[in-house]
Length: 153
Image (cartoon, rainbow, N blue to C red; front, top):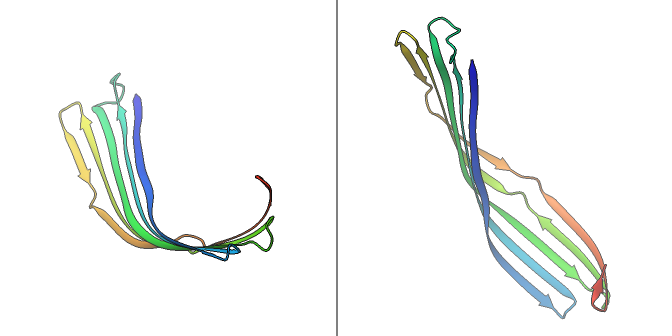
């Protein structure tokens, strides 16, 4: 009996950013970002069993094929500021809102079986379509830096 699993996955996540920034008296630096994200994921797999040595009566082969495609888009906001109380000290704060996604999945599966007597059977499940919303976590970041000449910590 020969068994084989072939699986391919691919995908990407991208973000287009619209950003604004400002500098107030070289003491306070402010930034705002609006992010428009996209995502795509594809998972294709085929599992196969073949009776290559003819050890199972009337059985030749069987396979199962599954495809999942996920697509979506989302939006997020990022806000940050850096305050410079002295020439060597920098205080920072950043807020990253969740990314709110709208996601669409399509899932399909099919199975085939083949027999030595020439019979074959096929079953294809109905297309599964799922639409849902997804929200990533909120993040807050604080920072403190010391700059001495051309070096920093």
